[in-house]
Each structure stands twice: as structure tokens, then as C-alpha cells.
Length: 242
Image (tube, rainbow, N blue to C red; front, side, top):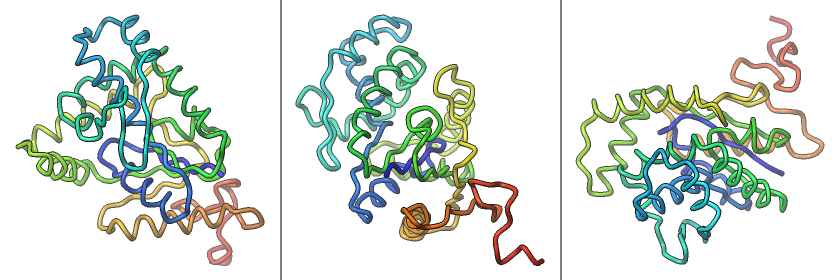
């Protein structure tokens, strides 16, 4: 079974997906980390953002490995390094490069063939795993997402300003939505979950319930409006008579 969690930056996808995978006993794939690894490698080699061919060649040559919560680049643990602000600012050069994205999508699909995996990103339910059994679109208000990003950066020793983070996030949202390859789009059969006001445990529990409804022999889960995601015109049993 494949569970995809897509959504904008700062929605908490990575943390939620990892905890959900642990609760289900599934594997976890952080696809955002894959693009960050490529960006970090490019920065260390001094590659210009417009050197498209150089980024493709680099993406194909480096070795990235995931062990639990740790991420490795050519054998080095870069779990913290890939989350730095200067790496975030350069991720778009990897994400917007069609050939880099094609290479990473192939890696993601190869990893997914073993099944029983929770994967998160921007295009997991639309491009990478269009036939995934359960798809989630995780989001939150812009202010909430910016606040979370500020908290995360502060924990890493940085001193970001909320207004600057919010502005950068808006720019990134627009870029993600209009990306020519793998844009951020909610899959038609994805269940939208808004996390404002919910604790981390609340979110994970809610997603675990959604996954449970997709297990063999169970009815399909319901989207936020209360309709069967497989048949959007079918009302929920408890609202059909109202």
C-alpha cells in the first residue's frame, strides 16, 4: 500500500508522514530531502543555478541514502545541513530542472515498488504515484506555516524574521504552483486535511484513520466536504437524508 502526502511548504508533511509511517509500520520516504541533498551537493561544488546540465550530471552521480531519520550524501550524514536556509533557497534549481526531477522520480518509484510506504512531497499523488491507494493533501494557513518555519529555524540556531519568512513562503507557493514540471496540485482523489489548531498527534491519528478506510475490504475514505473521494457526487450516509 502506498500513502501519499502532498502539500505546500510548512504544512508539516515530513514530520507527519514520518510519524504516520512509524504508527503503521510502513517505510517513510522524504522526497523533499532528496531535492535538498542535490541542492547541498551543488552548493558545495559551486554550481551556478543556471547550469542545468551540471545539476543533472551531479544528481546522477551522487549517492544519497536514508537510514531512519538520517540522510546521507556520499556517506556523510547531512540531515541537519540540508535544512539550512541557504540550501532551501537553492532547492528550486533542482526541483525546476526537468531532468533532475525525472531522475529523482524514477528513484522514488523504484523505492515504492516494495509497497507499504508513506511518501511526502509536492507531486506524489499526481505524478509519482498516481495510483496510490490513499492520498492526502496536507495544508495550513500561510501564517501558521510561516510560524512553524520560524520555530524550526530558531531550533537550528538561526534568527529569522516572521515577515521575511512569510514573504519567502508566498513566493515559494507561487513558484511551486506554477512549476512546469511536477507542480503543486491537489490530486482529484486526495483528502484535504487542514492542520490549523490541531496537535501533531491529532493530525497523525486522523491520517491513520483515513489509511484504515483504504485497507482491502474497507469503504473508501471521505473528503473534507463529506463525499466519497472515489465518487464525489455520493453524499455520506449520515447526511444523505438531510
